[in-house]
Amino acid sequence: MEKMRNYWKKPEHIAYLFIAPAVGLLFIFRILPTAFSFVCGMFDIDMFLNGKGFVGLDNFREMFSDDYFWNALKVTIKFTLIEVPIQMLVGLVLAALLTRNTKFNKMMRAVYFAPIVCSATVVAIMWKMFLHSNIGIMTYWLERIGIKGINFLNSPKYTFFVLVFMSVWRSFGMSTVILLSAMQGVSRDMYEAAEIDGCSDARAFISITLPLIKDTFGFVFMTRLIGSLQVFDLVFTTTSGGPARTTETLVYYTYTKAFSNNRMGYGAAVSMALFAIILVLTIFCYRGFFSEEKE
Image (tube, rainbow, N blue to C red; front, top):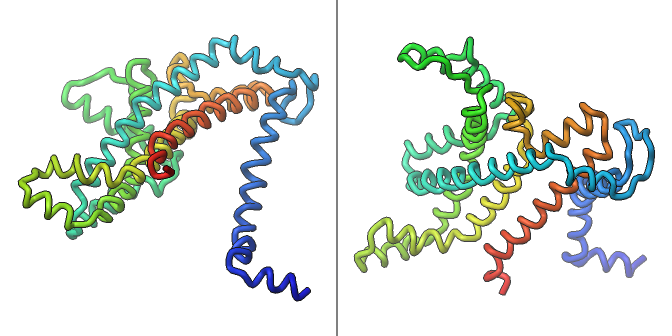
């Protein structure tokens, strides 16, 4: 008993007790469902776990021969390649502009951060009302200036980019605030020294700010990459994958297969494919942004 009491008196040991609840929740709600999904991917079952039973890798073979799966993967990659760079660029520029702690900048930080407080569903419903082809205020004002016939939410030409806009609009505040905090952590002495040497603001930003916030930039980039690859709420609320599957992402495709088509095993197989893609990309990003720090 005394030996056990002495063991738990050490700070490095007592720390395990404090992180145990978080680890338990992570295990129950993250690790176990992921493992269960991988197991379900090898069964032909419905959402009530009824079906033909074990089918091995048949679901994965069917997935790789399914044109709709490849279309969903293509849409997801396209969405990520457009949304993430815009998100990072907007966040970086606004963070640089709002670095000084003036009253106006503080107010604008709150304004830019406000959309992230709302759920993606609320944001999607709001923009759906704005852009509705019949009752949307945006289409009304466009018609007033002579632009008619634009159906933002049901047009293969516009709908995809409307989703990108909604995603950037909702999330850029988080990227801005995180990058802003990193920029404010850079010592002013370095900028003063650069100014004495005749360095311009743009040059100082490129040569001083960007290298010193590399880790934070990498963190924001990785989180936005993962979030973009898992986009679902906006698609589910606004377009349901249409028109003509031009906005059907992998997560929405998984949802329709698992719940609408009642093929939980096949849906789990698709989710595992997305998990593998995210895992590989995250590892590459981690090595790219944090390899020097590790060394």
